[in-house]
Image 1 (cartoon, rainbow, N blue to C red):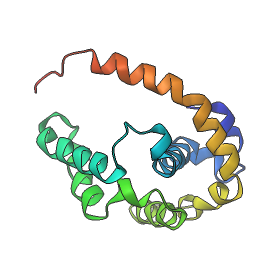
Image 2 (spheres, helix red, strand yellow):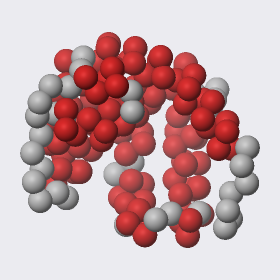
Image 3 (cartoon, helix red, strand yellow):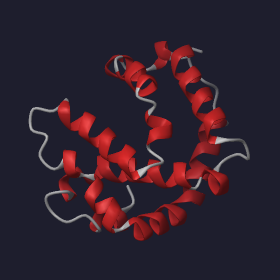
Image 4 (tube, one colour):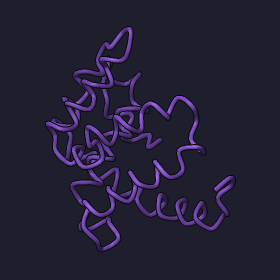
Length: 143
């Protein structure tokens, strides 16, 4: 969790910050794919991720099994590159909760503080690359 980003969220959004900051950072990554990506187009990366999720579904927690088809069918990974896409994603997430509270309106802080969340992500990016490299160096169990 990036605590600076967490603190940017005022109540009632702050208690949802782990979810919101994750979605916001997905947005920043998708918008900045040319800078952060591996050199290929976002479409190719997204298709590869959907394929990996399907191929390795047996490794995923059971609760995630039902989410993977929705991710793909609603194309969340590419949709999150647009602010309206973030609002739609958060609205769908809120629709599955008994108390959707502020999650449905969770795109508002991103719209208001996009530059700040973008800077938070940029500061975190080197750590994310290091963590991803460490995970990639380990063999995948059960594959």
